[in-house]
Image (cartoon, rainbow, N blue to C red; front, side):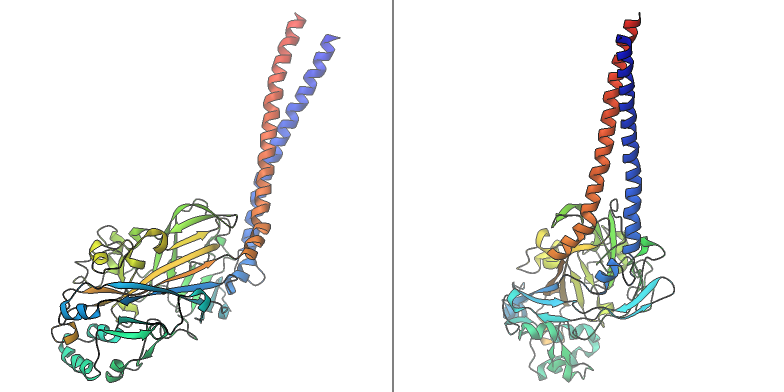
Length: 477
């Protein structure tokens, strides 16, 4: 009787082990087919093609995009001109505009799995999100007066000086925020018989675009979705005369190819800075309940060639950059009609000490001034972007131009810094979680539960079976 009971127990334990093994197998199968299902869904919905989720978000940004501007009010204009004093600047802002609210236009689907389009520029002033109206006035650098000497060969500087005196121009001027951003009729440019006598930091803007983009749809290979194939019909840039610096790498930053879990560096192209740039993985974050990977522009992206040899080809003027050893600043005159414009991060974040210390009022800090992207790693969608850029104009001493007589050194003068930001809105975040995050989490929990339960049953019943078998042998003896 005891032997029969023991055999039944062994049978039940063996069945328990078999059930445990079956649960482990089912869990493994769920992992395989679950991952396949996710990949198949992304391969289908991530393609830039009418009817897909990616196309819906690509053609027009669902969440509002804002550009915040901070301008710099000059506190000591007379001291700068009369004695070459260090500029003292005071930040004013933000002045906020809604941008990128117009859908892409002139969309053409091509035979090589690419799509061409234009992205119209647009800006609507948001008074409720701004520090004041566009009519706020401040003392700012006179763009035409400071920039003209760099546009004209030194042999003609006497002529420039006469023009400046004819219109009673100073190195600084009092203008409204709207004029400085979007343009005003400049008497200096009219005297110089410029084809466009209007000047301003972003003139023109509304109703314009920065050229045709040609991007991969991902239909043939999802790992290429969103990557720029051509810009303005060219596969490389015409600005830097270098194979490396003229490369057009990555996407436009609004999204990236999917499955970024182990990706440590992402690339994107920005026409604002006339080059491709990279961001490095920093940490995992949670944005409205959605796990994201944060990527940031690191110091070495804009470092001097001494720290980052790849950046040598971005240095075009060795005399004003201490033989290209200054870091954290990028001259873009090659793509801005030879105007002496330089790009940096706000308040010269990560720039050389000589540049930061040449201007009083610069307080760089990582949290406020870095450029970052929070990317959902499964889809590659950028759910939060904070693109922060400072625009500077360089002016230098001139013996033949009176307003520049007392300037001691070439000066990188901050004009404005901007933060173009977009964050996934609450409704889109909810839809995103319902369609992707929650199903993936439920699937993961089910897979893990089956694997753990099955493994626990196998181990527990196996131990019990060994003990029972030993006792049975003892009884038989």
